Image (tube, rainbow, N blue to C red; front, side, top):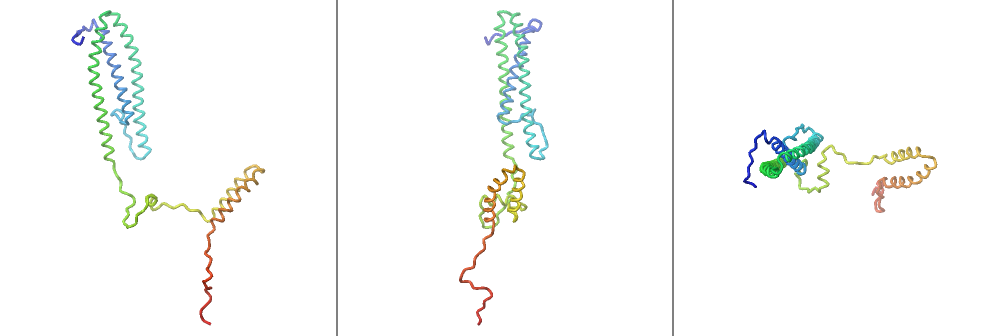
Length: 241
């Protein structure tokens, strides 16, 4: 079967050449669909989808990543639409050429498919090389990422914990959270404002629930004064008689 060769005259075998062309286009569509799906699964960016956006901010970088993904998905969608139209045309061409050539058509079809498969094997090898090249480019880009200097350089003999270093990394303008002196009064006013907006039969119940909590917070927030011991003498007493 492989040694059989057909030399067709264009005027006699127009439908055969049409079938060959449509079958080749469909198989190339399948190869391109597989290539784009591999790029999506491996987070690779083919050249046609490499849309450059100035990376002036984190939002711009995120937009560029989304743009690449949308471009590849649109390409896959377009290839599927193209494949559907080609399949319809191939079906019509197949019926026509089978009617024209009769019993000879199966031999001709096998010869066409063998010829196309040889060409498609070269295309798949080319796409595999493209995938490997994109993967190598992606790995090299990750290796050459710029590394910034540490924000905190410890020149002392003190060993800081991880939490302390995280706090120092926030910078000199970072303020520790603290409670204001009159935070209880402010809290009581805000609570009373909310309570007055409720129905009357709920107000007293909520005041009774909030009052013990506010009293406990008020007691805990008062500073504890150191009581003088019995052995200490008043400061106005002197040792002279």
